[in-house]
Amino acid sequence: MKILVLNGSPKGERSDTLHITRAFLDGMQSAAPQDVQLIHVNAQHIDYCIGCFACKKNGGVCVLDDDMREILDAMLDADLLIFSFPLYSYGMPGALKNLIDRMMPLSSWNMVKNAEGKYGHRMQYDVEKLHYMMICGCGFPNSKHNFEGAVRQFSLKFPERSTIVTVPESPMFNIPQAAAFVAPRLKAFRAAGCEYAATGALSEQTLAAICSPMIPEEIYAQFANGERR
Ligand SMILES: Cc1cc2nc3c(=O)[nH]c(=O)nc-3n(C[C@H](O)[C@H](O)[C@H](O)COP(=O)(O)O)c2cc1C
View (cartoon, rainbow, N blue to C red):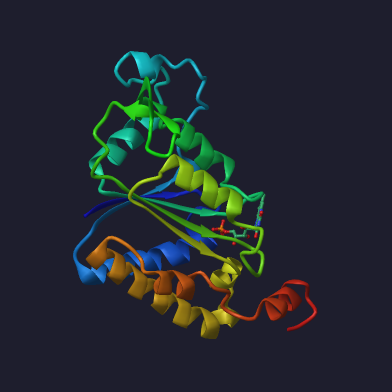
């Protein structure tokens, strides 16, 4: 399978969330060989969409000539897009949102209504084989009233063939003293990757196991606040 990973953390390789994504990919690789390309979004030259809609009327070519041209080609060549990013202000970091805005050329001007009455633009490139995954880490100790905005946006943008993984307490992945709690979770991410490679989806049970806090939320908050060492 061709996998394109879009790392939306401005920390690049030092991303907390990338630990999760790499473990998941290791699990996928253990099930079958995978062809993985990783792009650090903040290291790319991607201008803001200027809203001209030229791409929707000229057959799908953006007027801006920057790194997004190559990224769109890589997307169209992939089977799975993994958007790996930290939760920022209850959404995705700006550079990644900008990249998603620049996916505009993939769809045409034509608007169509789906079975639920929701309108969307008709695609002008073949994206039927594309699967989408969001892997989102965050700094707070639990998911309550935290991930909803990001999850809703992702599922509206990519309503089909899409999987969403949200992980609280993710700074723990970069804290050596937390290794005893992190190691079993990384193992669970590898198992999840293996499951995804085999079935193309994650069960409710798997999602519940990988999206839960690694340590009790009150204890995490005490560590974060310096009240416990
Ligand atoms: C600008 C900014 C906004 C953030 N907003 C949130 C937030 O809304 N909720 C949350 O739980 N954590 C928030 N965080 C914390 C990050 O999600 C957290 O530190 C995460 O582990 C960083 O992941 P990364 O290393 O992959 O970039 C924010 C951090 C920054 C810098």
